[in-house]
Length: 282
Image (cartoon, rainbow, N blue to C red; front, top):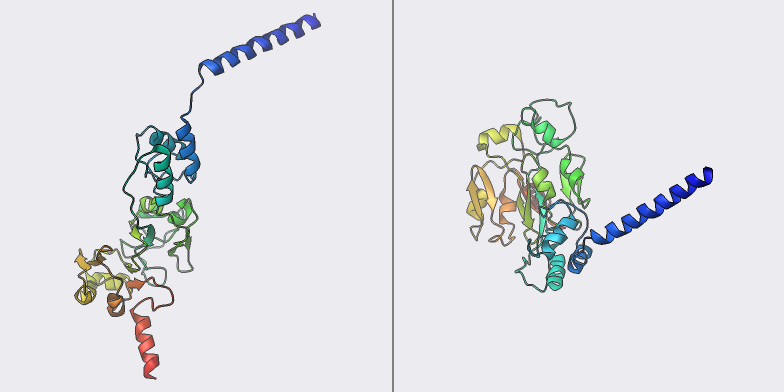
C-alpha cells in the first residue's frame, strides 16, 4: 500500500508537471526585444515621474509607441537619445538640464510660527492642520517630505530645517515638486543661477511680519534688471529664466536677501555684498 501511494504521487507529479510545461508554452507572453532594450537604458528607479507606475510600464509603452521616447524625465537627454536609437525615431530634446530649486528660505530662524505642531513629521500631514505651523501660509513646512520621496537621494535637510538640493545628484524628475504641499519647489534650468527664494503672495507689510527674508514687492529688482527679466506678480518677484542673463544686479539690491546667487565662490545675497563693501571701507 505504501508503494502504491508513492507511485500515485509520482505519477500525479509527472502529470501536473507536464500540464504546467504545456501551459507555460501555450500562455507564454512574448516580450518585445525593444522593450527589454529600453528597460536596460532607463534608470530603473521606478520614481513614477513619467506618469507610469514603474520603469517596466514606461518601457512597454515606449516600445509600443504609446508614450514619447523622451518620457523618462529622470534620465534626461542621454536616456532619451538612447531610446530614440532603439526605436529608430527622433524627438526634439530640451538641451537645458533642469534641477529642483527651493523657492523659500524661511527656515526656523527666519520664519515666525503661529502654532506648535506635534503630529506626524510629514509636510502633507502638517499642511492639513491650519496650513502648517508657520505664520506665512506659503512657507516651506520643513519636515523633509521632499527629501524622503526623492528617488535619487538628491535632497537633504539642513540645520535650519530647510531642504537643500544636490544639483549633481538631481535629475529633475519632479517627484519632490508633486509631493510638496506648499508648491515651493520648482524645476528650473540649471543654467539659471539667480533665484527669488520666496513664494509668498501676501502684501509686503504682511510678509515682513511673518518672515525676515520674504519678498516685500519693493520693485527694486524689477527696475534694476537690464533685460526686463523680472516681473512682480501677485506681490512676489518672478524671474523669467529664458530672459535672465545672470547679471546679479537684482541680487545686490534686494533689501531682504530674498534673491540668491547660486554661482559658487560669489556673494550669495545682498547683505554679503554690503559686508564686502564695508570691509573695503575699513
